[in-house]
Length: 610
Image (cartoon, rainbow, N blue to C red; front, side):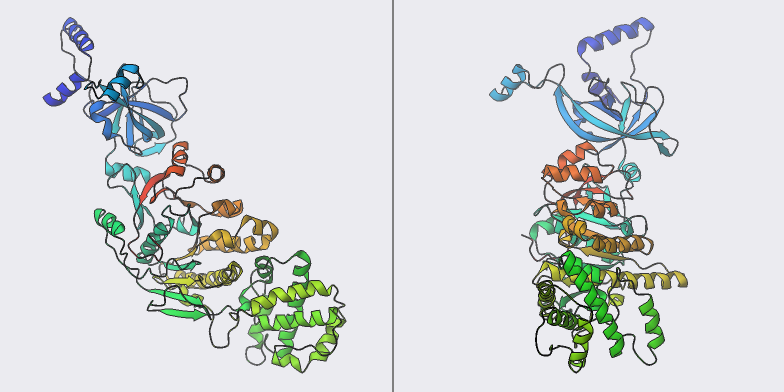
């Protein structure tokens, strides 16, 4: 031991104890020397107390080394029984006076009066045991470290290796560490394709984290499809001008910069939140992309309305065949017939189905059920000449309850007059283009007028993206190429998949569940973002394996998440309501344990960041 270190160690031992050690050393013929390995030890384990917990232990450390064990520091405990354990600091360090209580009147009074009396003190930290070291392997602990066992701090490299927190899609820095980067592995099928959730209250830094996540994913050659219901991310192609973010980025060795290869898509007849973006494209919704059951769920049909809607939908299918719209006549007939046989009404809409045609059919049912006189007037030109014939066929079906049919017609008419379905001059979203590697597609729904329209857009998009991704995946695997990777990020996810809607119309969740399960095998990852996680159904959270939790203050929500997300220890849950903006608890399938992370600022611009 160096002379300076020896003096430091000696000064930490009370004089009476030191004198007794010298006397004992003289009695056995040799001076006292500290045990081997004491130089590396920052502290020692304490005796257990009545409130001690399994897999947790208290470590005491001298005053001079108090700052060497910050929160989330990893330690190696060399137990006196020759076993070696790894642990992580979950509470502390706390400073406590030697031989006195911190609230002793003497200590309190002298502090208040400003008297220069500061007793010697020591540090106390609480360590959660991660496992027992057996060679290079970490196994579940079989015993507890014994009292007075030496505790060492792991190096930054060792810490990063144990936490397994690294990845190409960088998120931020682990709190308590200068250089431990937390990121998501871009090439592990067991991580992002198993789906992600960003949860947190307004102002907690959630949008900034999502923007940084998008920038990193694009750099890792993911195709990113962002369903932006507020237009928040329509400026991602520009570097951030926020002075605070630029300062933090510079301090972390990162640069501000816009996200390349972005395109904004907006509904036809609506505007984007960023008219100055260099690449803006309108799109319409193809009604045939929507499962009739999903439409019924998203438009909140009552059970009688849903029954009538499905009857009209089935009748419209027959008209499509009669009109030669689908299956088409001529060279496409055989292929169309096969597609019609494979049609699954719980998964997608009937090929060739148009909202205007369906509206005409419902109007005919209203005409017959309401016993209205004269001929029924249709929107569809091809049906006008067959008005009497069609109303006669519908009359044979004996439709009842004209009021219910009129309510159904009213709901579909409100949808039709938005003029975003089956537009004659504007195409729908091309899922093949959206899934191109390195492309960021922002679906700007900020001017969509209603959550229902946004939700219908999302529902129509998800199934098409799944098909396009599956085709790309199979082609790449067949050619021996690396599989393409796609992320679909759904902002304000609680508006699309609320617990109330899923409970009433489970077919909507079943559709998303099928996409989620198939996506795991074909590199299609879903990412749900919300400030109201209490509105998400438990089934949805059950699909998610990666969580980024920003500040959440509602104790009921925190308690619910505790039951859903495994592996986060109690000390982190207690911190969740008080997290500062930009801090988050990150739990990834690739990490050895969840961590409190200082998230990186977004290098790109957001529309509404203060």
